[in-house]
Image 1 (cartoon, one colour):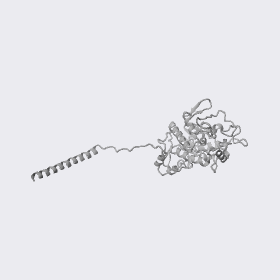
Image 2: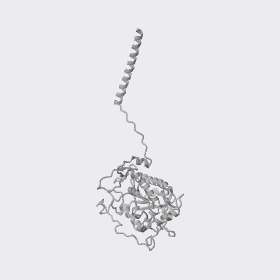
Image 3: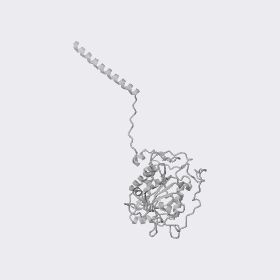
Image 4: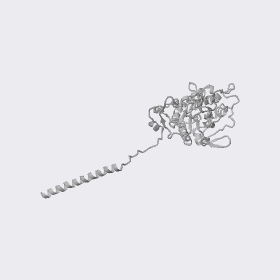
Length: 384
């Protein structure tokens, strides 16, 4: 009996000792946690790689693209947004996640923001196809000091994958050429040629790659992407007979997706259809260059005038007297106020004495000295 009592006592002492050790260990851990706090574990970060991920991060409230600061610096991320500011400031286009899920290029496009004088375009490069070449073909002071980097028959894929013919026996990489001009702003218009032989997905893929390349090579530079214009109704039917879809519906659906690509990158979408097309959504006959796709001189003046009133707002813009954001310190004359379109020959869509844009009706010669490109791996363009 005495041994049994002694064994029970030993067991109780052992249990008490274990509890004492555990209690001391617990206190030591708590004191160490107070004296030496550990940093919280940081969650893994995965960069945004798709449009869907960008949309998921947008708040449903009204948003707008972050505009470059007056010193020319660019936003840090491709899809920054900021709330709409006071009603007294420049006009903003409110865009929310719902608008980007089912985009409408007209709602995403840059609204009118006063009028700038022509010096605004002195450091601009216009990148495009034969539609953009027309600014040089109709060399009547439409945009006198801008650089025209445009090649007949090109598309976003062409510019990325081919050397472009400069017309003097030399070739250049289109992006390198644009960068070499040290632009303050770049206006892009492409897509008409791609409609002839590329799907919408392919067009958008290469357009996105082109915009990303321009953005990376030209930090802080304003990049404007212009809507793909529709053609005249008769030309839509002519293209359909050739198996080419130039329908108003396809072009507008493509513009919807293109506007979204532009917006989420913090760039600016300019809806030139608003000025070049009639209420039915087709190219205005008054601006027809003769083939239902290209423009005449009057069309280029209307296009230029639209760009004058649709520049991204910055306080250092050379706004014209009477504009809401006019700066009295700005100077320079605007060529558009008293200009009238050049006279046109009867029955023709081009100004008298002018050479039509490449790709205009059969039998007419292209402008002398106008660069042409026949990209490898792509059929000759029948459009722009």
